[in-house]
Length: 127
Image 1 (cartoon, one colour):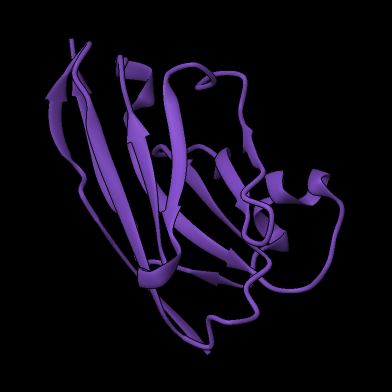
Image 2: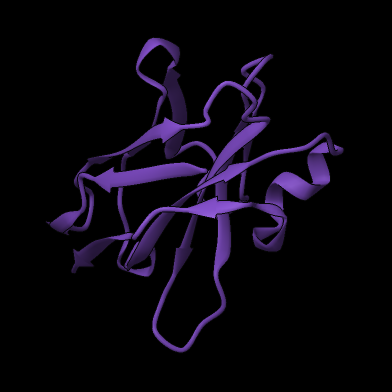
């Protein structure tokens, strides 16, 4: 089992920056990829960013590429999401996910392919 603890959400205004953190504990040595997803009320959970753990290859949704950056601290088993130039449409609950098992990178973008999730952290961007 893996436990994921998220933090860093909050209320900001458009153009501001925010950094989210996700600390993993438990069975972490075999994690294949970690990702960030977000979900607004009444909407499906959508892909934001992901990282393949072994190679540090990163993947981004078109809507956030150039504004958001995913990174890691391997020693702390922690993944970060640096969010810059925030927009009101970024408002959502942000979830951290951990994926086990080999797959092509396409599945990093699919929420159902992740095995564990954090509790979510609210990000609200006002205009």
